[in-house]
Length: 197
Ligand code: IMP
Image (cartoon, rainbow, N blue to C red; front, side, top):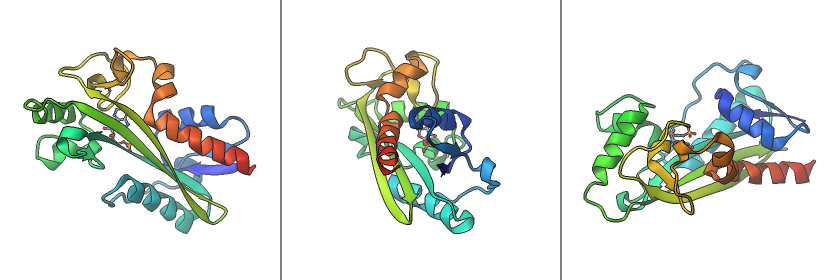
């Protein structure tokens, strides 16, 4: 069965293909000739994920899923959350996807706080046979005082998942995927799609 994953991130595509297995032909936006920047202007992860799948359904008439992820820090009332990719940019301290600037700002904003608990949350929206579904994956943890490790991307060097003594950036991709927010949400999506087949 062919299904579109509304992303051009090859790393995410490979990860999802591995979890969904050979029964699903997962194609990316490039594969369906979609080269536009799909708007992500909602103020929630759910809203953004739904915005992306509706865009693909409307313009390409294909079943589709899309994800959106945020890092939610307790002492900052859930920030950076839906703004995780452009946290520093919002405060005039860097460009979108400038991970270094994002981490610097987060560490600075936590300097005076005792509670360093946080969680990554991924929402996957799916449109399948005309119905809309949402799947959520959460990975709880804490924000470290400094960077550790060089693997991964984004906030990985300063996020340590609960039950582990390493940051995400000190783990292999396999170790991280097994416990990560995105891995968990994707597993739920996979279980649903497999049960529908
Ligand atoms: P996206 O929705 O997957 O594009 O994620 C939005 C932003 O959240 C990214 O630009 C990263 O800053 C951050 N992020 C998402 N997933 C991860 C992760 O697994 N590790 C570290 N940062 C992440």
